Image 1 (cartoon, rainbow, N blue to C red):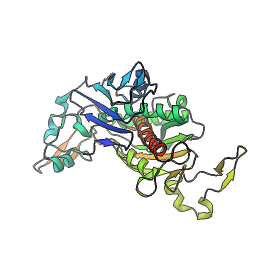
Image 2: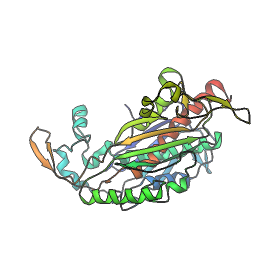
Image 3: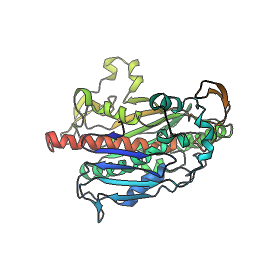
Length: 362
C-alpha cells in the first residue's frame, strides 16, 4: 500500500511521528557487506531534529537499533530491520488539529482517503517517517561505494531567492557540513541563515532547492521505457515530504536552448573512454546512465505548519482561524539534504543490482 520502495533492493518503512518509534525493513541487501552502526548513525544525525538553531527544537537522539540482518559487522543476506524509538513527544500540541485542518498539510487529504488519521505530529505524513529511508540509504551508499566507487553528495542550492555558487564536480561532504544550512558557499550560507532566522522569528517559513550529484556512476544503469533512471529518481525524491519540483541536468533551462546548443557531443578521452564534452543530460541519456555525473535538483516548498494566523475549516466545514502549535522547521532544506542523498542512493543501488542480474558486470 505504498510503503515499500524498490525492486531488488527493497525497503519498507514503518511508524508514525508520535508512536513508539519509526524504522525500516530492508530486503535484498547482498551478504558480507561491511557496514557499521556508526555509518548509519552518522546519516541519521544529519537528519535528526534539534541539531541547530534553524531546525525544529524537538530533541531526539534518533539512536538506531539494528534488530536483524547483521552479524559481526557484516550483512547476512537476510532482511535488515532498523528501529529508532520516539522519545520527545508533545502530543498535546496537536489537540486542535484533531478537528481543524492545517493549510497545505496532509490533514484534509488523509481524512478524505481513510476517514481516520493520527493527528499527533502528523502521524504517517510526518517527515519523521524519513528516518527509515535515511537508514536504508546509508546501507545503499555502502553498497554503491564498495561495488563501484559511487559518491553521492547533496547540498542546499537555494533558499527563497538566495542562491549559492557551487561546482557540483568538486563539492565535498566537508564543505556541505561546514555550516548549519548545508550550503557549501560560505558567504551565501551566512545570508541564508540570517534569512531563515528572520522568517522564523515572524512565525513564518521558507522553501528552496536541494541539488544532488552522484559521481562515478557506472554506465548502463536504468531500464528502457517505464523504469528509466531519471523517472525512478524523480519518483524517489518526489516521494519526500514538502517536495514540489524535480529537474535533471539542464532541466527547465534547457527549454530555452536550441538542439545545437543543448546536445552533449561525444569524444574519446586519453584512456579510451567515450565521454561527453558537456553534461546537459545530467548523466542520463535514453533513461540509462552514461558514466557522467548525475545531477538533479529538488524543489521544497515552505514548511506548511507555521505560527502565523491562517484561515481554514474544521472537519465539519466550519470556518475558523488557526495558529499552529508544535515544533517545526522554519525551513526543511538543511535536514532534507541527507534525505535526498538517501533516495538517490536507494535508486542507484536498486538499478546496480538489476543491471548485474540482467547483464552481469559489463
